[in-house]
Image (cartoon, rainbow, N blue to C red; front, side):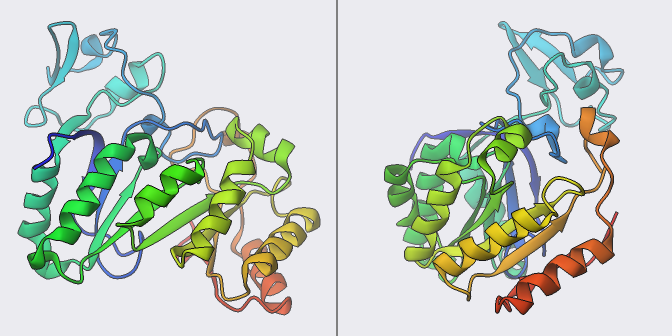
Length: 288
């Protein structure tokens, strides 16, 4: 079996909001975007082992061994003081998982699961691991019918998508903005690759859903909604669109001053899409 290992921020052994059915969700550490509205900002940066988090840990769950941060999950009480102390906002409570480790988790919870979703951060930053993990799942008869999904910002290049899609059943793709300057303001990157990824995924039959975050005064305006409609029409009106509402949960920095997206605003946007003939529109079940 492959010796590939992943830097994992968190694992959920049960989730019904990260793809179809009940799913094991693996959140990988590190992202190539720096989204102002990110509700998991601690998954963006990668620990540089500076040690500044160690004095903040009252449970003594962190230490420096051979120049690298070592995390003891048994001692940790999940107070997150270490994340607050980190100068780059990274999660020092990461753990290294092998493919065998993840397969063992799947076996343990298999009777309750429909599949696995790798999320982040941006999971395609650890492309070798997820490619080999999915390949291992697909090669085992005991995992027959177990689906493999990716939750991505779409910044992966076309050639690498081609490799990954061989073993991937579906991708949930985030588009943060259709105006490129707005997208760059919100994420630090152009949207060109993300839009191209949507086309690649749709053509391959692997675009499970296109996700769009509604932010008052930024992405909920007529221009952005019109471009969303036009883009979906260029793919196919059968595309599943998931409208997410910007909230303050987990957010840090300047986005805390932004207005939260109310349910009424989301419903108006959804009706706008449906009126344009896009019927497969999903809205949040909970607004926090």
